[in-house]
Image 1 (tube, helix red, strand yellow):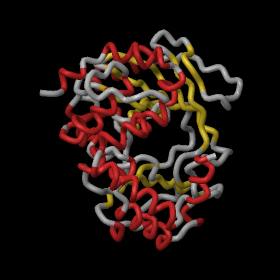
Image 2: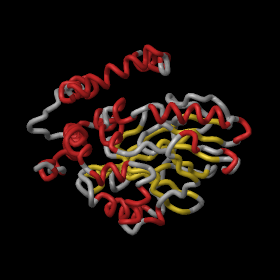
Image 3: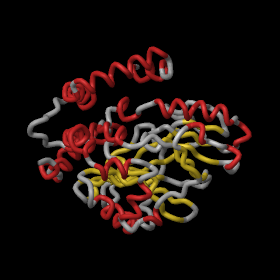
Length: 317
C-alpha cells in the first residue's frame, strides 16, 4: 500500500518534500534513521555495537567506512570504474562508452548514433535508453540532464559514498542483445550468493518513468533469482515466471574475476553482462538497495551465515 502511494506521488512536490525530510533526518542522526528503517524492513533491531548479521554490517560500512574510502568512490562511479578496472588489469571488461558530459550543455545529440544510453555516473537508476533519437529532442534530454545534475543521489538514497564522486553523465552504446545479468555478491573476498536478473523489456518497471517503445527512463521490469556458489536456488521474487536458469558456461571465469575485484573491498556486488558475445562488468555496487536486501529479509539464515564470514573490525581502526 505504502509503495503504491509512493509511486503515485513520485515526482510531485509532496514526494520531493518527503525525500528532503528523509535526507535531512539521515544527515542529522544517521544511526537513529537507520535503526528505524532497519527495524521497519527486517523486523528486528539493528545491533550497532556487536553486529552479527551481514545486513547490520553493511549498514555500518555504509555510514562509517565506504564514505571515507577513495577506492570505493572510484569503483562505484561508472566513469572512474574504467580506471579501477585498468589498474586491476581488467580494462578489457569495461563497457565501452561514446561520450562523457561534465555539464548538461555539453550534450550534443548530433554527434551520437541513432541509439544510445545515458547514465548518471554516481547514481543508480538515473538512466535514459534512447532506441531512436528521432523520437526525442535534444532540448528534452538536456532538461533531464539538468535535473540529474541537481539531484544528489547519495544524499537521497542515504548512501554517502555516491556523493563523494564528481557529477557526470556517461553515454554508452545501446546493445539490443543483452541477456540475463549475473550479479556476484562478494563477502570478504568470497561468493556470498549470485543474483540473476531476468529483464522483461515488454513490461514497464516500477521506476520506469517513460512509457514509450523507443524511450525508456529508469529500470525496466525484471525478475530476481538468487543462487549459492554451487548454483542451488536460494530464493526468487514471488512473481517470477516458471523459468529455468542454467549456470552460465563461463561460470568459473566469472568467479575468478569477481574474486579479483573483491580483493579490495569487504562487500561488493560485481555485475556482469554479456555484450556481443563478450563478458563486461557493467557496475560495482557496494550497498545494493541501500543495504535493505529482500533475500536477507526472506532468508535470515543466509544473513547470519554471511555475517559470520565478514570480520568488520578489520576495516575500522
